[in-house]
Amino acid sequence: MIIRPEEPPDIAAIRFVNEQAFDGSGEANAIEALRDRGAASLSLVAVIADRVVGHLFFTPAGIESADRSWPALGLAPLAVLPEYQRRGVGSALMDAGLEECRRLGCERIIVLGHPDYYPRFGFERASQYNVRFEFEAPDEACMILALQPGALDGISGVAKYQPEWNGV
Ligand SMILES: CC(C)(COP(=O)(O)OP(=O)(O)OC[C@H]1O[C@@H](n2cnc3c(N)ncnc32)[C@H](O)[C@@H]1OP(=O)(O)O)[C@@H](O)C(=O)NCCC(=O)NCCS
Image 1 (cartoon, helix red, strand yellow):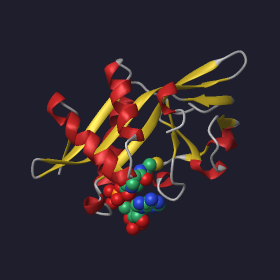
Image 2 (cartoon, protein in one colour):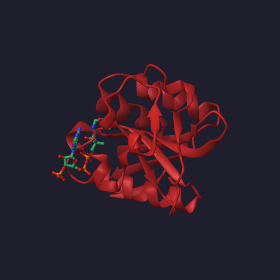
Image 3 (cartoon, protein in one colour):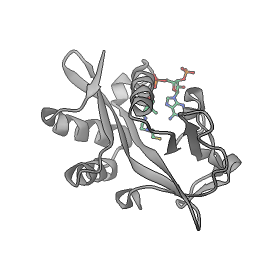
């Protein structure tokens, strides 16, 4: 398996992976809209035998309070083709993605996702840090990760994603 940044010829395959993983086109449409307006912070693909089988995408995000904001990256989505799931593809994408985000200087990451999956990568419940999400979602699905020491100290506010994610 190779994990690498997306390249222009991968665009159709990335749509396919997301449509198959989520059984719909909402995520794929949002990814393309964000990419088209230059709001993709990091887009990685997992390739097995020359086929794109997984995709991980990050966009600019933040935690906003009345008088302060803390920049972050929003992880959304992580997708693996159904027939390639539970073989370590998602974990390989996450390990490479988090390392690259750290290298890029990102201090914190937010995710709205499966509470049984993301804690293995260090994500914690955002509400522990007085961070709430705008979306209607169970508290345990709203998570945050510090990529630098102290990155969650004193933080408090609302986690904001790019508007393309509203309603997806
Ligand atoms: C979630 C997803 C990305 C995981 O990718 P993957 O390549 O299957 O994951 P890995 O093989 O690295 O890890 C498998 C582990 O994740 C767990 N896992 C997989 N999907 C899970 C899910 N939906 N909820 C909770 N745990 C899940 C498995 O139980 C397994 O745990 P184990 O190692 O303790 O047995 C993949 O299942 C997927 O694309 N799902 C559909 C889209 C989706 O829901 N994306 C996440 C949006 S937040």
